View 1 (tube, helix red, strand yellow):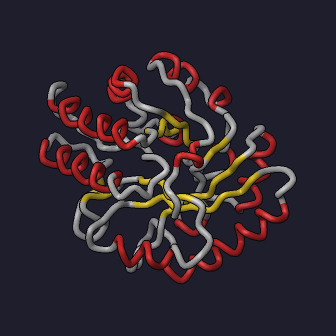
View 2: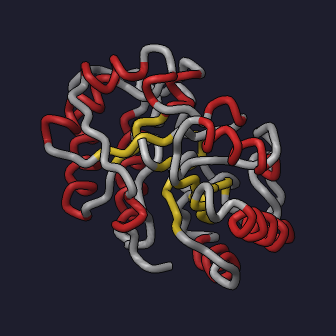
Length: 253
């Protein structure tokens, strides 16, 4: 794999290690591109994302490392972003004042962290599934995202007919908008409900594009797919062909 675009820093309060440790690990694994996409700050205090006043340090730290490592690896600066209606414009205006290479969409909450629910919590409520899909599609349609991180994060425990009926809408929208869907290595390593075979079998049959993201919250997770036990088999079993160097697909930010 040429590139990983999904890397976090300690600023999000639930990752470990220094930026340099992530970079050195990426080089040792043979990556040519390492994108940092820490959880985007929003205009309120949160235990799972950096604060607004940390943006400058985040960017300046990575720009210095980008210059230092320019002959060994290409360092890119981005964010993992929740699409929201309440905070999106203010957040976007703030982060685009600084160097920015790309954004990935990671829809953890609907409609947002303050007024909604975490989509990874188990649920049998079809309304939550529908809202997750509707909201995620609305975010994709903004045209600012390079790819959709862990598209199968929604942890639906209802019947086997309802889940694909809604998720096929999400997949179809991604195909129509030419947005790759991420196969998330962190979820696989941490034995979460994602990546989910049912989702990716369906997405593969429908003709979606895929990208693998380490979603590294510790340096040790910056690894090639074949070096994460069982992950290559997951890709093969679900007929997933990786789209690499997807930054070229991103809209300007």
